[in-house]
Image (cartoon, rainbow, N blue to C red):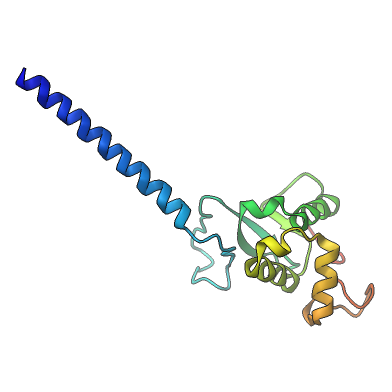
Length: 163
């Protein structure tokens, strides 16, 4: 009889421990900040020979003619701006890929998009590519401008990207 009581008590302890672990897990997920947290290779201390791992829930994308690497949250891929950029990438490069996901836009424009989304994802998350182009061009962001093939003085997308 005493051994049966000890067994029941151990089972209760295990159940309580499991409940506490579950609470900690849900609390840690809900308390985690939902910032954009994009990373670029030039921002980190990575050497060119080191292995670059993408954290869980994030995706590595390559931007610009020099293929600068950014690590972005996967939840951003459902936003209209990223849907438009992915469609442009499909038009530009096709469905076959010889490496990572390449977005056909300038690095400066992409940084501005991420900056706006980090500032207020709820406000700017519904904007499409055209709205971002208009908004960024009104701000006077000069690193996206080119002297040739300029439409309304602003070209955020790469003109002729090589795969």
